[in-house]
Length: 461
Image: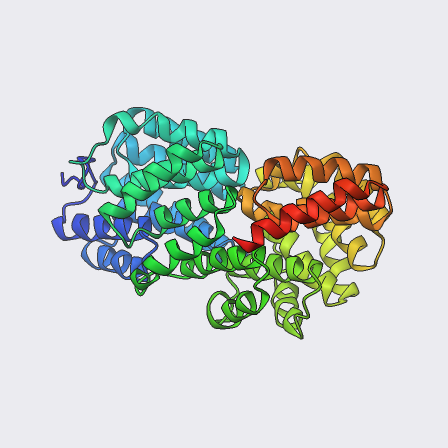
């Protein structure tokens, strides 16, 4: 029985299929454009290879598109039939169980299955990367770090794909708040492979969280030449560069990157849409005229307003609908989400607890009802992580909370929230300016002047 580069057996009689499948998994780790081509090569060599069928089902789910959910189910059925005919390893059967759970909408059960695999097969990089993804949207940074921590004993510089595993380790540590460990792992991963965009992006997150904007710009400028064969994830990395410029008040640069890089291609991928919607929302809070850019995003959001697959994506679709004034579509989407929130899947719980109130607050803000938005968002301030996404991505909702409280004239609450924010983000000029605004509204002119001075000092570099 052939084995992959990490010694894991694959049920196939074709060495060519095993080699092509290994190329597919490696391409997936690297966010490569040719990932699908390698999977096609695998099927050309062995059309009934169980792990290839299961992996195809996983990939269908990763797109978060309703039209592909049925294809994921078909992939599971085909894998079951292939296993019934030719057998499978224990590991492959556990992967099949994970896909079946995901098909039911039970991402938590799928994650448990991947973690079960990793305890016995710590070099299963597919299980590692998928659990990393699922923890990101369900359980947060601590779970991500614990997951990768359990497998690092099996990896070192001599094991193929060690750099990619270091990149996973880097991002897990960043989301768990261990920035020193994250930066060290991410930089070593990029030394091993400058084209490792996940590791590049992990370091970008560290620099974002620590307010090292100018370093971040230089970091990404030095590596962007490596992204020619990267899929749309490169747009997200350009978004990170725009975030640095945003903090520095360089709004023309933010819009130039919007139009020239991270929204240059009007894709419907949920990550691309979330990049764009969250940035436009941030820009408008800073008084930037964003022109007609909401319209294109609202068109996409309206087409996906009934998806209800990933609450994180739904919350961003609602931003675009609300900002473009599409009240009917927003009402229909809210009704669809309310129905979806009564389901049994993992995302149904997220919608019920966090997604729906966030969407309602978004609509209230778009209509100028800051008080209602504040009432909805305040109870969520320590639970917004349940929506998934990174600290940097979720910060748009922290901004919503701060601005809604300020807009409602609840000055003492605004002061408290922004005191917390500047403590956590001491190198954020935007946060210090908002804090100054809140302090002035509370009548503390001296403290407000000090906060403005802090913002000016940060901007002066």
